[in-house]
Image 1: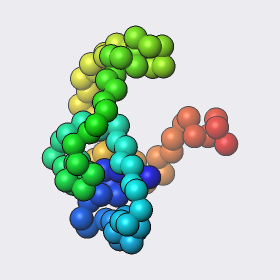
Image 2 (image 1 turned 180 degrees about the vertical axis):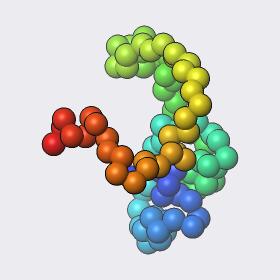
Image 3 (image 1 turned 45 degrees about the vertical axis):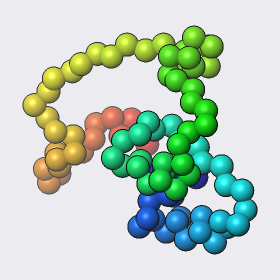
Length: 94
C-alpha cells in the first residue's frame, strides 16, 4: 500500500494500520518529506534507510532521464471537449 496515503489520519487505511498496530509494521514510501507525506513520517518515524534517485540510476535499476519543459496555453485538468468533439486517437485504439 502507498504509505503516504495509508498513514494519513483521515485515510480509511489508517484504521487497518491501527488494527494491526501490535504487529511489526514496515513503512515504505517513494516520496521525500513533503507536506502531503508528513503523516507517514509521524506514523512510522524517521527513515532508517534511504536510497536516492541518483543512486538508483548509478546502480542501473533506474533509467537516466532528461527534463524537457513544454509551455502550452492548454490546461489539461481544466479542458473539456465540446459537444460532439471526439478523441481522434481513441478511435484508432478501439
